[in-house]
Image 1 (tube, rainbow, N blue to C red):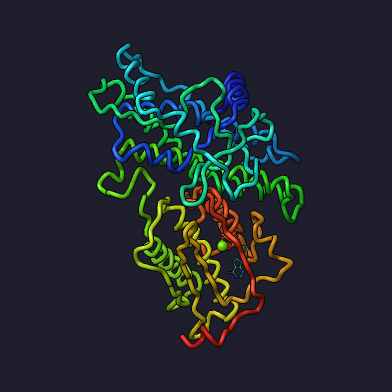
Image 2 (cartoon, rainbow, N blue to C red):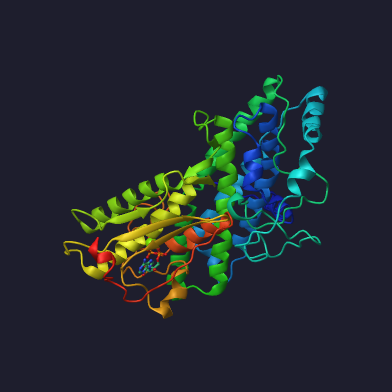
Length: 444
Ligand SMILES: Nc1ncnc2c1ncn2[C@@H]1O[C@H](COP(=O)(O)OP(=O)(O)OP(=O)(O)O)[C@@H](O)[C@H]1O
Ligand SMILES: [Mg+2]
C-alpha cells in the first residue's frame, strides 16, 4: 500500500502555505474550443502548480481534524489519496524546451494583453460569505486580495483569493493565440499530464462516500448522534474544494482529449448553451425511474415541467442535473411516503423555471408534507436523513458519487447547495408543513 514519506509531507506543508487561486467560468471558456498545444501547455503548467496547492491544503486539513476524526481509517485513506495525487503531479517531468519556443510561449501571454485584463475582472461570489469556504483557515491573505470570482451566470471557481502568489507569475489560462507549429515535446507533455489527471480523477471518485464512511466511524466510536459545527464546516469546505478541483481537472482533460469537440456549444465540460428544459427532462426521468425501482411502483408520481424550450445559459450541465436529480428524488420520496406507496394517484410535483435578467430560478414544489420548522436547519447537515437505515456505504460498491439510491445518506441537499453556490447561485428550501393536497393542483 502507498504511504507518504516524511519528505513528501514536508513538501506538502510547503505547498499548503500558499493560497489557492480562483478561476472564473469565463476565464475557462476564453480558453477556446480547440486550444493550441501552446495554450494547453500553459494550462498544464498552471495546473501543475495550482492542483498541488489545493491538494496540499486538503491533506493538511485532514491531518488536523479535531477530536480523533483524523485517525479514522477512512479519513486516513482519503488523506493518502490526496497525498498520493499530490506526489504524482509534482513528479511529472517537464520537457526541456528550445529557447524560441519559450519565447513564443511568453509572447502569447503578453500578446493579447491577457493576464492583467482577465484577472482584474474577478469580483466577489455573491453566494459565498467572505472566506466561508476558504481553502485553509491558516493561510494569510495579503491585503486587498479577498475578492474572487464573478457573479451570477458567469460564475467562478469559488472561494479563494484571486491574486497570484505575489510573484507576478502568470496565472490561469492566458490563452495562446499562436496556432503555429509547436514542437512534439509540448504535445507529449500535455498528453502525459492529462493522463495523470485522468488517473487522479478516478482515484478520487469515491472521496465523498469514503469521507462519509469516516464520519460514520467517528460517530460510532465517539457515540455521537449529530456532527458538530466544526465538522460541518470542514465538510462544506472540503466538498466545495473537491468540486473546484474536479472542475479544473475535468475541464483540462476534456480540452486535451477534445471530448466534446464535435459539439459546437461545448468548451471542455462547460456548455455555453446549457438547455434547462433538456437537462430537467432527463433529471425528471432519472428520478422517477429510481423512485419506481425503489418503491416497486408501476408508475412514479408525475412531475410537471414548466420551462421555455429555448432557455439556455452557460453552465456545467452535469452540475445542474445533479442538483435537479437530488431535489426531485427528495420530492418524490416525500410524496410517496406521505401519501402511501399503494395510492393510485399522487399529487403532481411541479418544476417551474423562470428566466430573469440576472438569474435563472428553478422552483421545485411538491405536496409531500413539507418539513417541520425545527428540522429545517438539520436538512443542511451532512448525514441528516429521515431514512431509518443508511444504504450500503461501501465506497467500492458505487463509485459514481451518491446517485443510485433513492435517499438515505443525508448528502443530497448539502452537496447540491455547494454546487449551486459554486457558480454564484444558491439553493433554498421553503417548507409548507402539511401542505399535501391543494385544490388547485389536484385537478390536474
Ligand atoms: N421535498 C421534501 N419534502 C419533505 N422532506 C424533505 C424534502 N427534501 C428533503 N427532505 C428532508 O430532508 C432530509 C435530507 O435530505 P437529503 O437529500 O439531504 O438527504 P436524504 O434524501 O435523506 O439522503 P440522500 O443523501 O440519499 O439524498 C430528508 O431525509 C428528508 O427528511
Ligand atoms: Mg435526498
